[in-house]
Length: 213
Image 1 (spheres, helix red, strand yellow):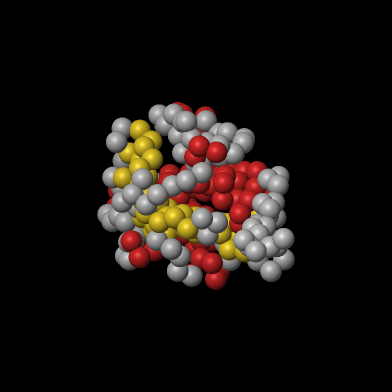
Image 2: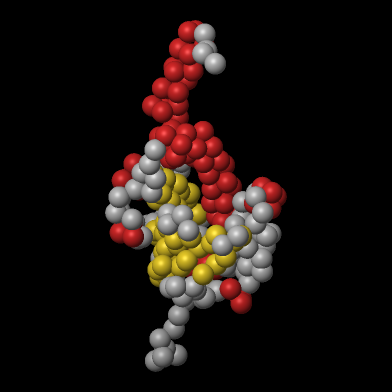
């Protein structure tokens, strides 16, 4: 069906406005220009990608208080994804957000697999406690990195990066119409919840050397 010319022009103008004005904010919500442009751990796994998002939040807590909440993420019996779990369940993922630190899920090893549904899941690629966590989606092959950057004022920048391969009209239509705005809604909630829970976590005791009295 051919659309009337005024409708076609209006849609073209709307698309142009989104691509120029809105989309950059969708892809880099909360991140500084420097954070969005900087290399992060895990980038080397996919040197060439079609799409990259970099989103961030400032957490009023040290990295060591954020890490326990981050490392235990995943479907049941893990601690959830700290986002809208009812939406995740609509997508068939058995997930429930937890509001406490789970001691049994405080350790990850490279190569470990966290399954989600129907053969889909995340493989742990790199783990540096209280520094960064690199995950890779299976079978999509896209990467997801969380990095913690301590600031001079005692806060921490929590930065999340997704890198996706892809090509073709169907890929871009799905990304722009659904995945990009949808991922922002979910990830924004996740980052805010991670920040809130870390900020109420007691600061870890400083490690004392063996010779300290």
